[in-house]
Amino acid sequence: MSRLAFSDLRTAAYCPRKLYYVRQEDDREPPPRVPQIRALATQYERLLEASDTALAGEPIETTPSVYRAQLCHTRDRLQDTTCSRPESEQPQNRWEALCSPAETDVFVAGRDCHGIVHKILTDPLEPVLISAGSPPDQGVWETQRVHAVAAAKALAWDRGEPVGGAWLEFPAYGVIRHVPMTTRRKGEYRRVLRTVQELDGPPPRLHNREKCHACAYADTCGVRTRSLRSLLGFG
Image (cartoon, rainbow, N blue to C red; front, side, top):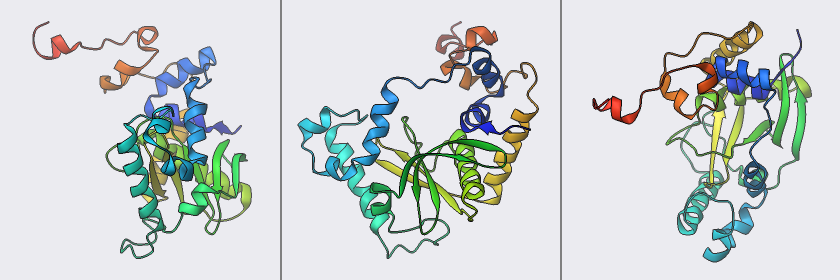
């Protein structure tokens, strides 16, 4: 069986039916703003020193003062070698490696999937993925967990070395999160992998219709989403 693209796994983790429509239209181009946001992930040191006026001209999603404070917090956390959390939960002293990675924009091919890893860190070997969106309050989104495991497994297969985790960067917010390769996350990845491998025709619609509100294929799918008015009992 041919390898699957990281993007297919990420989309299927959100909604398998959406992946079916994406494949029908071959709609895989990122929005124009995405490359601009990803470029921030190689300029953190410059952004920390930038004035409010300069930061306001960057593709950030917060005020300059909030962005600088959040990026400072991220830097201090990743440079903190006295942190009491387990090493398996949060590798420390990775700030310099994230600012100056060993490799960038590398295509990796694993046993089951392939795609671009935005940065590769060494000692230990870990992939870095860059998100143009916003981070959740803690951790990363479900789709990003699946993507992170896929990238880690593909990198491990490609390089013939074990990979114990991955990183997610949210450069428009100055946030960087670590994703350890836990048993639960690997199981989540395998379930999505099987779903994509077995995809043949449009899958059933999701029961969680909240995801449908933001989906570009809601009309094509034919799903009914309730308006705020109806949810409040006025419709």
